[in-house]
Amino acid sequence: MNPSPFKPVTSPPDTHTVTSKIDADSRPTGSQRRRWSPKGLIVGLIVIVACVFVMGSFLRRQSESAVDVTGATGEESIDSGQGHPDFAAQVANVVAGDSTRLLFADVPISDGMLQDLPVQLLTGLDTVVADQGVVTDEGLTALAKLPGLEQLRLRHSPITDAGVAALVGCEKLWLLNLPQCQVSSKGIESLKKVTALTQLRLGSPRLGNEACTAIAELKSLRGLHLIGVPVTDEGLQTLASLPNLDSLYLDDSEVTEAGWDWLFQHHPQLHVHVDQAHHDRDPNLHSH
Image 1 (cartoon, rainbow, N blue to C red):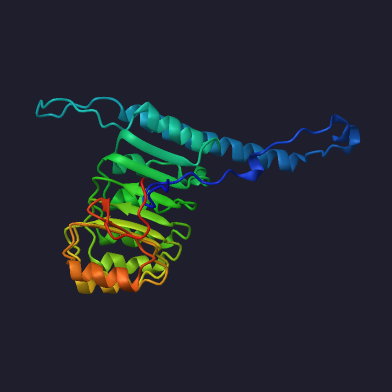
Image 2 (tube, rainbow, N blue to C red):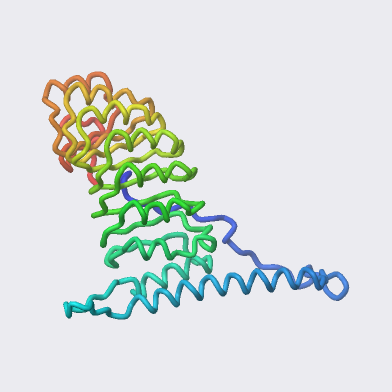
C-alpha cells in the first residue's frame, strides 16, 4: 500500500539516536576528564538562561492568551485558542528535542500562535500541519523563518501570493499543501526558487488553466495535486512536460477523454487520480 504523496510522512529513523552500551572501563577518569574553564562555564550558563527565558516567555504568552476576553460591546466572550495545552506541549517537545513535528488536527491555529513561536529554539522542527483555524500570510511568514521546515500543510487558510513568496528562503521545503488558498499563477512562479519542492497540492479559485504554464516551470516536482483548477486537455499536456512527474491528481478538471487518451499514450508511467479516485486506465492502479 503506497501512502499519498501529499500527506506528511514519517522520516527515516535517525541513526544518531540509537544508543549503544559503553564499557565503564573506557570512560575517562580523574585527570583524563575535560576541565571546563571559567569562561566556558559562563558562556554555557548564558546560553541556558537565554533558552529558559525564551521558552518561558512563549509559555507565559500562551497562558495569558487562554483567558476569555469580553469586548466593550458586551458580546459573548471568546477563547482565542492560543492557550490550548496541546499546542504548548508540542512546541515544548520540539524544543526539548523529543519531536520534530507540530501536528494540529483539532487545535484551531491562528497567526498569533505562529508568530509567538520561539523560532530560535525550533531548529529541529521539520513538519507543520494545521487542519483547523485560519492562517493568513502573516502566519505563513512566521513559519517561513523555521530553518529546517520540510513539510507544510495549512487547511482552511486563505494564503495569497505574498504569503507563498515568503517561502523562497525555505531551502529544505519539499512538500507544500494549501488546499484552500488564494494563490494565483504569480504565486506559483515564486515557488521556482524553492528548489527542493517535489510535492505540491493546491486549491485556489484564482488558478485557471493558464496556471499550468507556471507549474510546468517547477522542474523538481514529482507529485502534483490540483483542486478545482479547470485544467483543459492543452493544460494537461503542459503539466505532463514536467520531467520528474510521477503522480498527477486532478479534481474537477475539464480534461476530456481525448485528453486522457493522449496522456496514457505518451506518459504511461504516470500515476493518475481523477476526482479523488484512480483513473480506470491508470497502469499503476492499486489500493490505498
